[in-house]
Image (cartoon, rainbow, N blue to C red):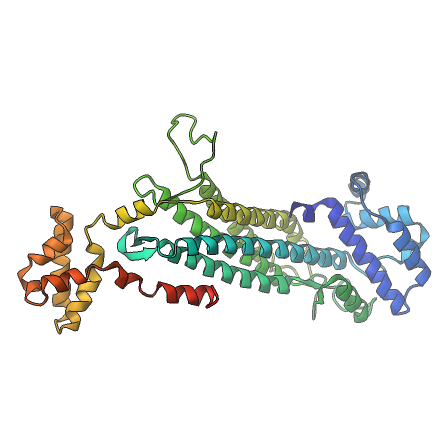
Length: 428
């Protein structure tokens, strides 16, 4: 990902755009074929020394594209005058940026798939690993750890679809000139360039490609980052000492604290949370870039020079870190079961409530019976089932055997296979 944003890579894309544009001009009869042949032969690649020379020229021109073209003129000779004919700087800059963001999207899509594969593997591994589900951080009803991971998988799939749409939206080039009128080059040259470079021509543009496309792209990255943070926060909660149902890998020789040798901290997940904040900030910056003066001003340029590489590199890193984290996550089923049993079966309260309602009891009356016995568990430390069995009003409605039947884990998990089929398909 970093290589996509190197100066050498940037100048190679600019070179390719200029050469393919000249190729299109030759086909349209606007430039001589001999000039194209010379430019192709002499344009060459770009070394670190070439980058330094272009930077040196720019210190005088104060204009990056002019510095680049000046360098090519020095390298190629008189035939270079046919390069950039009828074009404006943004024809090169925006088309090159589209190529870079498209290729970055491809790497991000690969990273999402890698993360999905890791999550799917662990989801099936823990399809029947029972644990407590929580709402508001409080025990709710039983789930499985595999179901939790299935939710992650489905969310990543949506992120993949969202990123694919953003890739399509950003993979758009333009060679429409200084204000988008094609005054000096016909649309067929733009069409030729975009076709050769794997882009679509922008249906209409000003001096630039409208920045709502870029805002969509960085928003998709930010939403992906928010999802990864959601998963990371869950891991952080599960690793808390009082919970300890799952834990990040802790390798030989690793240290958790300079002061406390016992510490094993969720640093990978915390790192992901922090990076997600950056991605949201970059999305805001991209949204701020949408509103520009008239046919174009330059206020967006400095922003994109930062958020382009930073957002894509950070996102790519997050995906690889998250996939590694999931692959090596330590899961503690015994601890999950112990935590599930902490409230002595009180997680079956809704099952009892519904059973009483089915037997004809008013819902609020049934709620009162179940709730008062649940409160005894909190206040008196009594076992939930024991409290229920000694409730005379409940005993009028249900036998001890019927009450005990409401404490079956299988009842809560009987649709796990069906849910997995909906998420992963019938073949898995």
